[in-house]
Length: 272
Image (tube, rainbow, N blue to C red; front, side):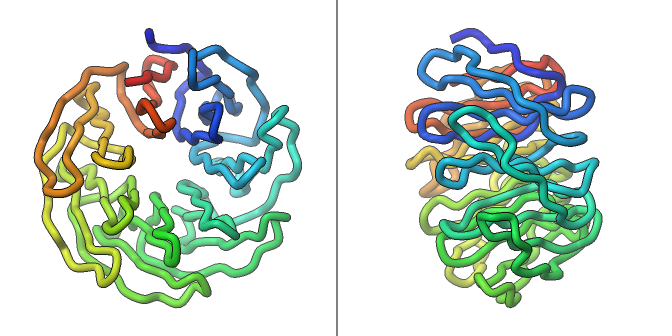
């Protein structure tokens, strides 16, 4: 499938079971819905200023608006806006834990926990400059970009641990047993054991990596300065492939068959 045009400066991606949702940063300030099976555009919907992260919560889509300090909730079926809810400063990553929505607020060094109706359930301090966030099914993991570490939180916001990783950690993903952290500045990824934060290895990828995703067997990393994806075996971190995509790939989402990546500088998404 050729690269698919979306809005300007595409960032975060998420898969809702049928479609890929793409956040198009400023000046577009939209999200694009793309049918995963064939890449046909299903709609483009307005959100707030400078959208960045995307997460799926059942029949709803949640988008962080980095420049507006809020999140937008949309109905997945038709893109209708169901609400806009204030969070912290410069919300970046967003994750659904099976019950609640969690948002990493880069500018205020904390995370916000939201109920499905948008009610704020708590705000919890983490490290410096949190960007990426992921759930392991029980706990929340946050990549602190300016702190070179990750924070593990219980579902009630209690800090369970802080673990050093590489330089400028950004993307973060769970593989069913371990947490994978993308270190942008050091061009590698760190594998941590989810149960206790033990460092299981650091593996080289391409230049200035951003996003990371798990496909059920392998780990994929988007390398923004190489215009490639790196595919690693999750079991041992061995390099399986380097795959060309568009210009400045940022974030990833797996649709159950193929991996999708947002190409920030070419205003497209790729399916590989």
